[in-house]
Image (cartoon, rainbow, N blue to C red):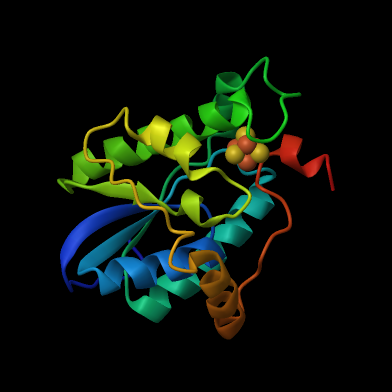
Length: 182
Ligand code: SF4
């Protein structure tokens, strides 16, 4: 689904995990001369209402920066199959690596489909995620650009920008297994 359009610089596909994490990532990419195309591909998020809520908040960001946003299918059953056997893994374990790979694989395919040479992800904004674990999955795919969005104060900036835009900020990562620890 295409929600808006803009054309400011070289396009880069930005896999987005949620609206708040997209804020400082988008600002950094624009400052570096890119036009991010936002790709919401997060079949890990459960339940669907939560997926939709995070997407709706991304639309606020897309409108604010006048950027295109693409909504991928929510295929949670397929995602569950991919992480089967790792349901009890701790966060930062094998399940999370599979999860990163699942979403980055789809981002790589979408970038190729759209003829966009580079792609990256907002997942590195979170101070709860190790950027190197995300990079090691992204490196499997041509065009992946390693950007550590938590650097340059990215995490704190995302909190400030989210407040300014009135965005919903969730308290757990996304899947039902991360929610169990609430
Ligand atoms: S905790 Fe987060 S990164 Fe890990 S599998 Fe769940 S949704 Fe994916």
